[in-house]
Every structure is written in C-alpha cells, then in structure tokens.
Image (cartoon, rainbow, N blue to C red; front, side):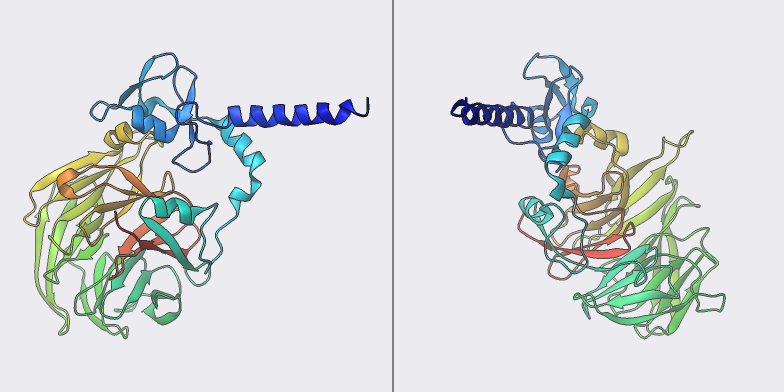
Length: 402
C-alpha cells in the first residue's frame, strides 16, 4: 500500500494539472487565459469560450462577424462577453496579479510593463498621489522647459512637475479674486510658455506666465469653456459644451492682449475634450452624447482638418463593433507621428485609433494599471503621460516604435 500511495498521489497531481491546463487555455491558439486584455477569456453566445485575441482574429474586418470554431454558430464580436467563472479561477490561482501600483516604481501592475511594451509602450514612472494632487482634471506639457503642468482642486490650482516627479512651481489661488481659479477643467501651454486654464467657476479662460502672474482673462464669450489645446500657430482651440461649439482664440500672450475669438464649429453635441496635431493642425474632439436613462450615455470622437472639414467620426456604438466592450472616451491626444490616442475610462485602458486617414484602427496600448484616466499629453521624446484621477497620479509610458 505504501509503495502505491505515492503513485496515486502523483497520478492525482498530474490529473489536476492537466485539468487546470485544459480549463485555462484557449482551444484555438492554445495560449493560457489571463486577466490581461490580449488573452482574456470571452464567452461566445453559443456558450463556447475563446480568448479575446482569437475573437479579433476570427472576426471579419468589415462586418465584425465570426463563426464559433467549434459549433459554427455565427455572432458579432460585440456579442461576446467576459467569462467570469474563468476570470475568478485565474484570480484565485494567481493572487499576485492584483498588486497595486506603487508610486515611483519602474514595473507595472501584474506585468503591465511587458504587456504595454508588446503593444508599443513601456511603463516608466508614476508620481503624485492624494495630497500632492487632489481630483486632477487637466494636463499639458511645456516642451520649452520639459515641465508637466497639471490643473487640480488643491489650494494652488496649477502645479508644475519635472519629469522625475519633483514639484517645481505652483500657483493659482483658490478664490474669487480676479486671477484666482475657482474650478479648473483643463490646461494647455502655449508655444511661448504661457499657461492657459479654463475655469468653470466663473466661465472664463485665464492666462498666466510660468511664474503664476495673470496675463489675460476672457469671460464674456463662453457659456462653459472646457477643453483646450494649442495649435502649431500658437492659437488656442477651445470647446464649449453648453454652446455646442469650438472656438479659436488668437492673442499676444506676452502682452496679455486678446486679438480675436472666432467660432470655428457649431452644432456639436456637448464637446469637451479637444486635441490638435502639432504636425498637421488636425483637430480631434470628444462629444458626450446623452440619452434617456442613467446608463445610456456614450461618446463620439470627431476628426476635423485644420480648415474644419470633417474627416471622420466614430461613436461608442461604432467602436463597440470593433472592440468587444463599451468604450467611453474621456481624453485624447495626437502623438508625434499623428496617431490619435484615446483614454477609455470605462475599460481603464488607452487605445490608438490610428492616423486620421486610417481612422479608426483600434489598438490597445495600455491595458493595465489605470483607474480613471482623464487627460493625456506627450513629451518631446514621444513618451505618453496619463493623468489618472482615480488615484490622483501622473503615469509616464516610454514610447517604442509602432
């Protein structure tokens, strides 16, 4: 009996291992399932399970339909869903995958660095946190000084950080005086180094120099100024969701002289976030679509040429045909090569939608480690900076070749 016991134990162990492998691997590509997006287990409507990458591979590029490789039942990629029992089993068997992100570390959550690297980005650094930043809302990069400028809800509304995470400057008192900032929504930095802030508290746009001295306040022209970005000509493109419009601001920022405010697009649906390509002048904007009921809000990304001709658009429903989960866009930016990069707060990821001429080509580039991304910007060397209001932090990802 004693001689056979080890054999039985070994057989049971091998059986358990074989069962675990059989359950936790995709039967199409034979890769192990994981909580990461690439090999996340997905239920097909017929009940069979394959990984997310195989869903994308099997789906037709035009109508996004696929056939189950086992029973041949047809469905759309948007009709697939996460296989929760397998995800829970993976979590039980791999508890180390839920380690929270530590500020200042150089490795990501659950192998985030490896995942992002394979998709174009490598996690590099995180800084900020509650207290240093309080409910941050906007971020911009000053390429003249390599400073990261952040708008948040602290006593000093504007903070300037070096790329190592050290605070270099802060200004913008919370209050009702002329140059005080009541409630900042977004921030940009002009080519000559001036900080421009939208203040929803008094519906104004405020301009400061890098020492925090007020240079210009514009109040009378906007219903609710929200998102803004700088053009290659050193003008400001600004969104106004209450008016449903985009405007162009031209000013001598050094002298604090407003030259012109021109409405360049109207009849938009609650436009908020806006981005301008520094190479082509192309403008991208996120519209926030509203419908009856609390769970029916969605977003739409619109792309305009520099002379405001519509190039393309895609809403949450259209993106859902390509990506098998609802996308709620909360931020966007152009990288140095002109790709449109979008943050998705619903899935806690960042996506590349391709260049305007190929829009939308959906490619996840950050799939782990984000809580609620609200703003994006790029450094001079094409590293992506994500402002994450979920944990009040700034996260930097080093870019790699596409």
